[in-house]
Amino acid sequence: MSNPVPPSFPRQFPAMAGPNPDLRGSNQSGIRAHNERLVLTLIRQSGPLAKADIARLSGLSAQAVSVIMRGLEADGLLEKRAPVRGRVGQPSVPMGLVPEGAYFLGMKVGRRSLDLVLTDFLGTVLNRIHRTHRYPDPDGVLAFANESINRLLAALSAEQNRRVAGLGIAIPFHLWAWAKPLGVEQSVMDAWRNRDIAAEIGARHPFPVYLQNDATSACSAELVFGSVERPPDFLHLFIGFFIGGGVVLNNRLHTGQSGNAGALGPLPIAMPDGRVEQLINVASLAPLERAVIAAGGNADMIWETPKAWTVPEELVERWTEDAANGLAWAIVSACSVIEFTCVVIDGWLPDEVRQTLVSRTRAALDRFDLTGLTRPAVEEGTIGSDARSLGAASLPLSERFLLDRNAFLAR
Image (cartoon, rainbow, N blue to C red; front, side, top):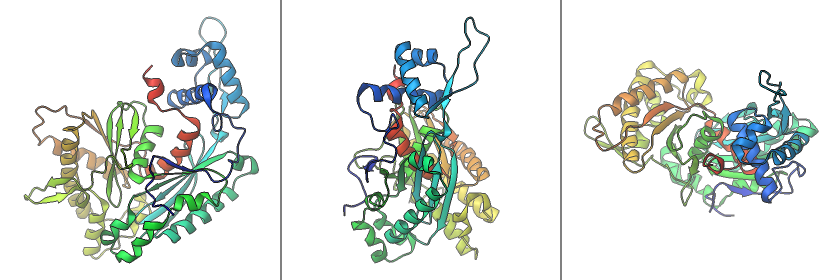
C-alpha cells in the first residue's frame, strides 16, 4: 500500500457508497449543492438565522433561500427555532442546525495514546474511546479503530447510523522517523513505511475516510469549532508529545505541498544559557515526561487525561518556563515571515497549565526587540485536549457539508 502521507489534503478514501445518499449537501454537485453548503456554513458560523438574514449575507435571492432551507429542513439538517418578535411585520423564524442531522467520527493517532470520538452535527462529543500505548504500531491502531468504530456505532439507532457521514484520522506524518524519541527500535516503527491505515479502515466501513496531519487537524478544530472572533490570519500551536503547528491564511487552512505546513518542531531556538536547541526539545510534553521519570515518578498519568495530572509542581514550573521561552522564539521567527496578527496556543494540557504557559509566553515575547514587526496577540486555544480528534471529525463535516470559510467571508 502507499505511504500514509497523501498527495492532497485531506485525503479521502471512499469505501463503499455512503450510508446516507439522500442527505443533501453530501452527494450533490453544481450550483444547488454549493448554495446548500453556503447556507449551512453561514448558520454554523453565525448561529440560527432567518431567511432574510441568509439572503442578505449570501447574496442569494429570497426565493432561492426559501427553496434551499425547505430542502435542508426536509433532510433533517435544519429546524425552526423560536420566532423573533418585536419588529414591524410578521415575526421572523430563525433556522438552526439539527444536532442529530449528521454524525462524524474522529480518530487521533498519538505517540502515546489513541482517541476515537463520535460527534453530532454541532461538533458536540457524544461518546469516546481512549487508549494509551507505549508507541503506535499499524496493526494496533487498525485493531483499535475497527473495534472502537463498531462499539460506537452499535450504540446508535439505525437512523443515526444512516447519518454517519465519515471518519477523519489525525496522525503524525512519517511516523517511522520517530523511533528514537519514542524509545523503541527503528525496526518496530519501520512497519509504518508500507501501511496505509486510512485505506485499510475505509475498506471495512461504509463511509468515506479522510486523513490529515495531527497538528493540522488541531488547527482545523479551532477553525471550524472555535471562536468566530479569530482574525483571518493566525498561527496555531498544539503541544502534545511533540509540538506541531497549523497555519491559517485569509480564513483558510494552509497545509502546504506535503500537508506539513506549520511544522515548527525543528526550529532552532536559543536557550537562556546560550545553547541552541530545537523547539521540539523544549516546548513538547516529551521533555516533561522525561523529567517525571528522572524524578522517580510514573509519567503514564500524563497520557490518560490532562484533567488528572499529578506532575510535581516544580517540574511543571521548569517546563513552562523553558517552553514559553521556546514558543516566544518560534513566534518571532514565524512573524518575521508571515504577518500573523494572532498566535493560538493549545495542547494536551490542564487548563491551568495552558493559562500559565500563554501568560509566560507573552512575558517572554516582551524581552524581544520587535522593531519592524507587528506584535501578534497570543491567545489560548478554545478547543483544548480534544483538538486533534475533533479536528479529525471536522474533516468529513467540512468536506461533505461546508464551504471554505473564505468563500463567503470575502463577499
